[in-house]
Length: 84
Image 1: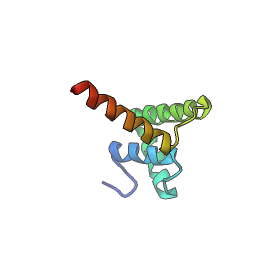
Image 2 (image 1 turned 90 degrees about the vertical axis):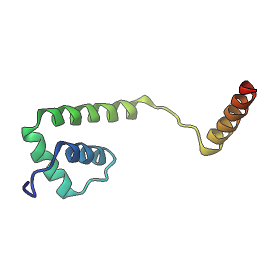
Image 3 (image 1 turned 60 degrees about the horizontal axis):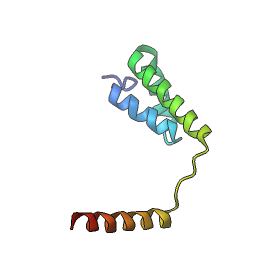
């Protein structure tokens, strides 16, 4: 396989990295070349972009670490109580 050609698995991985602004310029170039001829990866890339945009617009607030730990502790306590 040529240095410019990448597999669909690699293209999807680079697409994911691009979504989080972690892909290098060279990876992006190879991804764009791959997308020219691969319909399935174009669809994956489009869906990825749609998902990213939807999440950005959702205005969802995530729980902080302290709150997550408290929920986990309460869940484990309830699970233990229910199994007895």
